[in-house]
Image (cartoon, rainbow, N blue to C red; front, side, top):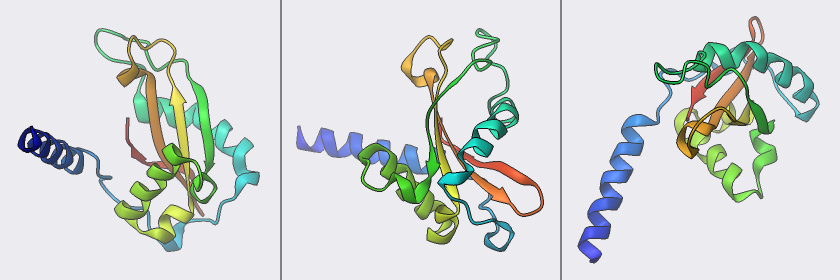
Length: 141
C-alpha cells in the first residue's frame, strides 16, 4: 500500500510540475507596487482580463466563462494566514521569486455556468505593469 501511495504521489507531483508553470515571469523592474487599496481597480480590470485569459468557453460549453464571481481578490502578502490562499502565494514565489510574488495578486474565481468543480474554479495571478496596467501572468485553473 505504501508503495502504491508513493507512486501515485510521485506521478501527481511530476504532473503538477510539468503542467503548472508560467510561460514567462514578469520583469520585476517593470512592475508597480500594489496594495489592497487597488482592489476596485483589479475588479474592474477583470472585465477585460478574464475574457482574454479564459475566452468564452469550450467547444461543448460555449459560454461557460462569460459569467463569473470573484471569490478572492487580494495582494499575495495578504493571503498569509489563510491556508488555501497562502499555498498559491508559495506557488508564485516558487515560480517567479519572492519579489514578483509580493507585487502580485491572487484572484480566485467561480464560474457558475460550469458543470463541475474542475471547470467552475479559476485561479489567476495578476501584476500591474508600470506602462501597460494589469495583466495575468499565470492561470492555474
